[in-house]
Length: 136
Image (tube, rainbow, N blue to C red; front, top):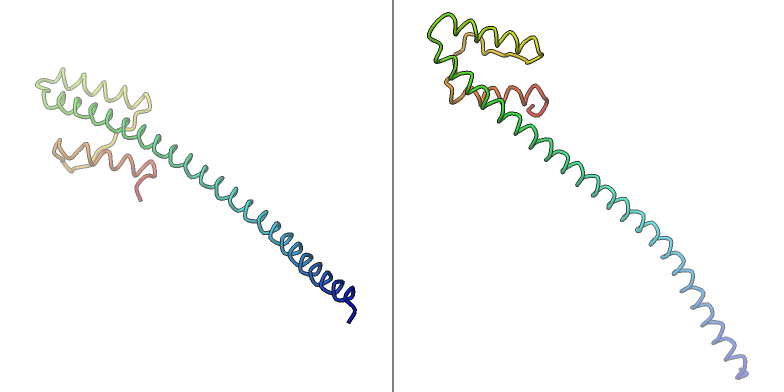
């Protein structure tokens, strides 16, 4: 074979190899674009999850503070009820209870069940959380 022909055939095989590499690079660039979009989607989902977790934690803290304030209020009321000694005090407490009901405060009882003060607040908090949809 002629020397120039051998060089041309060698050059042609190198051009074919370069064309294959360029084609594969273009394919990989497309795959990189897909992967970049997937990464961005995952980052967006992570940010949304972090925001939701922060919102949930903030809501939980607010509700825990609210439950604690209700617990303290309930303890005060129980103490006041335990100290009722005459009909006038009982009438005052009943009027306060009616005023609370009229202003929209939900008054709940455990029916005929009598709970100890140590457990009443816990049960009330659990019932309130259940009503708000945080438990089962």
